[in-house]
Image (tube, rainbow, N blue to C red; front, top):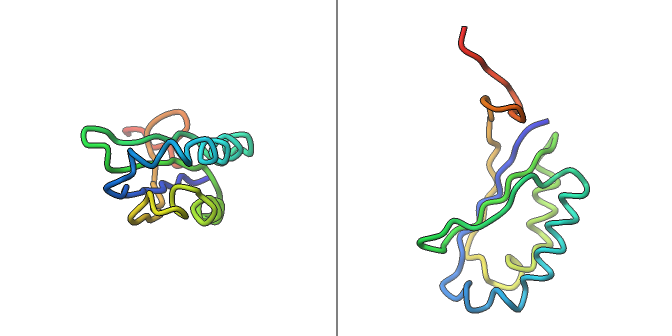
Length: 101
């Protein structure tokens, strides 16, 4: 399994509009957890300007599906977003564990 990160840059009115879409976003996120795709999700704060969601999958396809149907993205709370593969190497859940020789 690989790790992928969905990075979302929030719009200026994100915090004010978030309550309207939060339950739908969280429902979708917890469903992805139950499928074993989503590992961690949350916002970077101070300033509250970026969301970060960590996925575990063989391909970026589950991340793309999530983004395509996400209420925050589809309702303009996210100004821009992109998916990056993250080559994790340290930690029990790393995709490519590397230890010193």
